[in-house]
Length: 153
Image 1 (cartoon, rainbow, N blue to C red):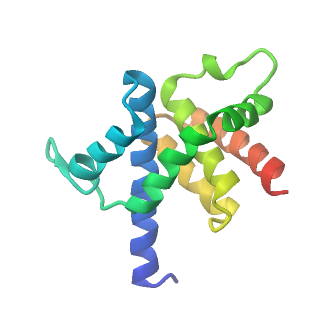
Image 2: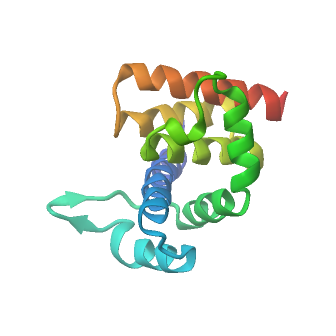
């Protein structure tokens, strides 16, 4: 059984993943500069109470790495995801939240060797739950599993 400290870290990382997907979505929708976006999330979203909903304390360093890492490696990430889609389906056809989930998950699989593959995929399935149903979870699982095999062997 994980220690209380490990459970707290796990919750903080889970909150960081969800917030990163939200930040990446906002970046794509509004074109908000990454630096401004990070500042907004640090000051007003991470660990805040908005409309009576308390947002969990997030691992800010992990959040920053996910957001800046996805942006810095977007072309590489998009190519990896596109390679796993069927020939008649493109990344652009996916709706915006789905693209951000797959981008963040792919970045984590690519760049965060400290996070086990199973844990990363499982966490992004939980993030998918915040936006979608079971069918989409299966899709995310399949894509991220294929990406993991490609980048982690």
